[in-house]
Image (cartoon, rainbow, N blue to C red; front, side, top):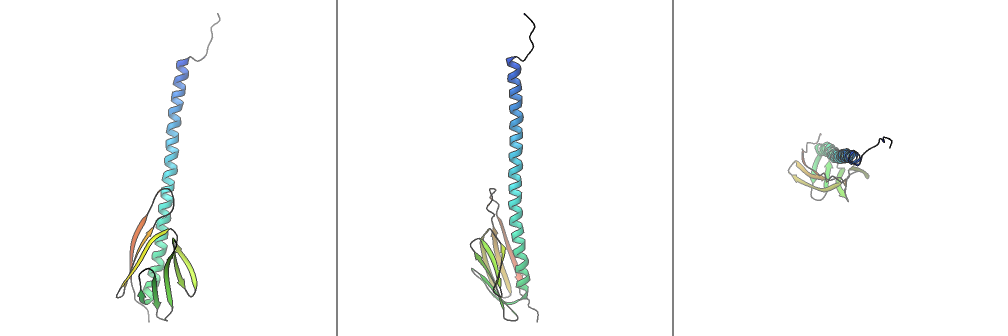
Length: 147
């Protein structure tokens, strides 16, 4: 018989086992990359929404002369015009001169309280991603109208 060269069954099993281990490690790495990216994106979305609301809340609150809180916030400015913050579904909206501006989406809870010249807002943002991220913040502004 002629000498034949090729792979034995043992060599083939070792090759398949090594390939399987490499595929498992790559699969786990890809899964982690996707999961961490989704978490980071959801967390960034929640933080951005909170920052946007905080900016407008601070801007409007400092210009207000009076405020009423509860399920919605109504700020009365020195010229007697009003700015209303309200939660519609999961959107937080700012209404001024009949113009509606959506400040944030994915808002699950919001509450306003007014004590003398101090307005407090408790806000929860929870983007609907797979990571279950939720951000809670409390913001306070002191009304100090010009004029």
